[in-house]
Image 1 (cartoon, rainbow, N blue to C red):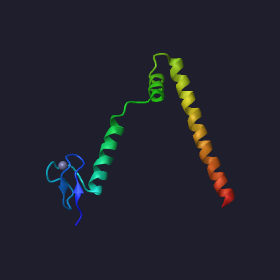
Image 2: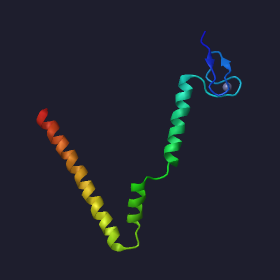
Image 3: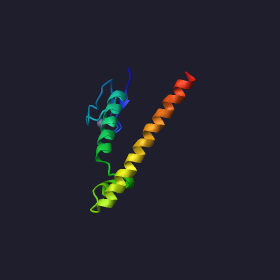
Image 4: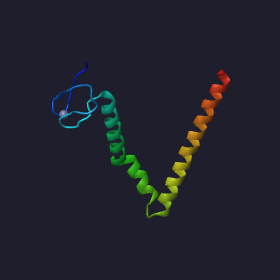
Length: 96
Ligand SMILES: [Zn+2]
C-alpha cells in the first residue's frame, strides 16, 4: 500500500490522486498535469522582453524611416535564417 503525503496540508492519503482533506493533487501524474498547466498560464501572462518591446515600438513608430529601418532589419534577419537553414541542409546532404 502506497501512502502519499499532501504537500499542501501534510495529510497522509492512501492511493488517491487528490488529497482527501484539501483536494490538492498528490499523485505524480496529477502534480505534473497541474504544473504544466501553471507553466502554460505563466508563459501566456509573461511580460514581454526588452527586445520584444523594442521591436514592437519600432514596428509602430511614428516616424516612417524608423518603420522602414525595422522592416529592413527584419528582412535581413529572415534572409539569414533562410540561408542558415539552406547551409544546414547542404551540410546534411554532403554528409549523407
Ligand atoms: Zn491536503
